[in-house]
Length: 129
Image (cartoon, helix red, strand yellow):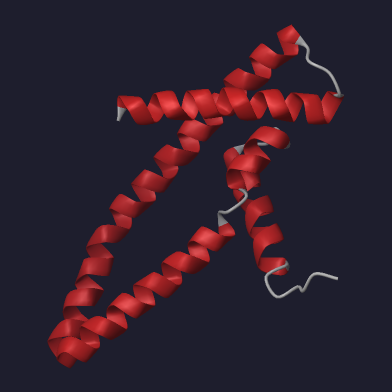
């Protein structure tokens, strides 16, 4: 777990350097330190939010999986797993750009999740020109 936190802090440092240069066109020391601190805390908060959400979803998902297995046997379990995988894929798609929004746009967690879902889900079926 400690290695994961260190990885997030190093990643936040890297992404904040990129984000600051993209936003301002130059590197500024005092602004960078404040921006890095906000980004690191927000990224750790986002990871904490994802972990808590997964822990809260384990019990209901296990209950649904067990109920469908009880009612449908092997087919019910396959159906339940398929539903969980599809739902997880859509959630992952919606959260795809959250880290980038936190660091590059310098917004809070809730707004970053909204922006990520907005970009990913609105442009899901768009074809490149």
